[in-house]
Image (tube, one colour):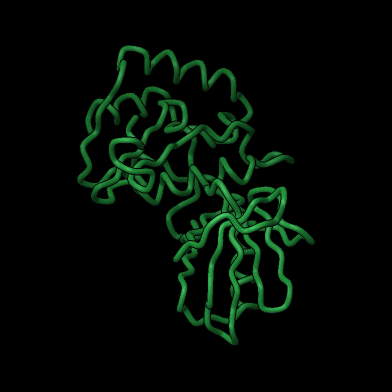
Length: 219
């Protein structure tokens, strides 16, 4: 409903990680992208971030370690090899054919990319070093669906290193208003998350339920 009222670009969903931090299997590119976009949207004017209390207890990499989103627009001039290197550093995987979020493929002067938060992959065609066109296409038929003027790629994998920052402090909501829904349920939800993620808690990857609750009540 918020998306229908405000537009998709104004609303960011902040899901829980879904898997233990630092485990052998990381969260899906889509979850990583949603979490990165939500962190990047905190405190930004005309933005709404929707988060469950347990997600706010999961510590995140410090601000300096979080990759910024990569933006490409028609008419931009760029080096394709450098672009691919940057995407690889953000967790994108080079494949023969793009089919899933987090995939990228290169053929000559064409880059196919499935951004981690996008509904469709995009085909970026270059003429020399200039972006000549960007087109959304079907990952099943590989056929063009519609032209677009720009794309934004958020991270597809979490950066290496400890998740040491409490998101309510770093980056924090800034000057944004905080609306708490069903605040009486927050404490129980946080305790359940702590019990469910015992390994993360022991490793220091979770903030204390009491601390998160106090911060939510103060903001």
